[in-house]
Image 1: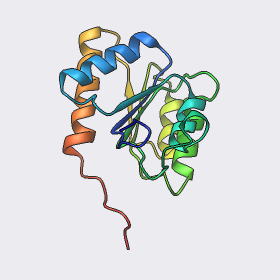
Image 2 (image 1 turned 180 degrees about the vertical axis):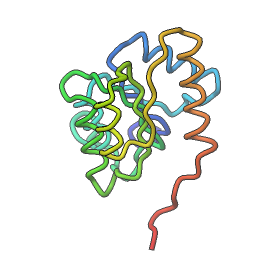
Image 3 (image 1 turned 45 degrees about the vertical axis):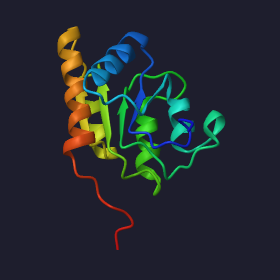
Length: 152
């Protein structure tokens, strides 16, 4: 079965290959990376989420269980990706965790006003970064209880 039709649990939106590799390794260590898709810019993230471009074969309804989203992205920035996710009825319930190096108050405030589920500053140290990503994966995939749809 192709990744385009399988259930995706984590969509990692990260342009920095080192940070992406660290995240994938941390999630693999916890056996949480089997159904992970890594995209390298905001435009590709939107294509994936809304089944466009290279992802035209997948169904929007088969969205990921969680999106790990960097803010500083090429093509389309993370704030715009978040804005579009939360504005669309088909995707607005997908939990989005901003994982970014930005600790600017205005970024934090804007993300929460747009409906982000969590805002995490990227730790600089490898071990701490791996721990944070691993704990995020555990929480959003195994501990968090998502709503069941359709809700009446």
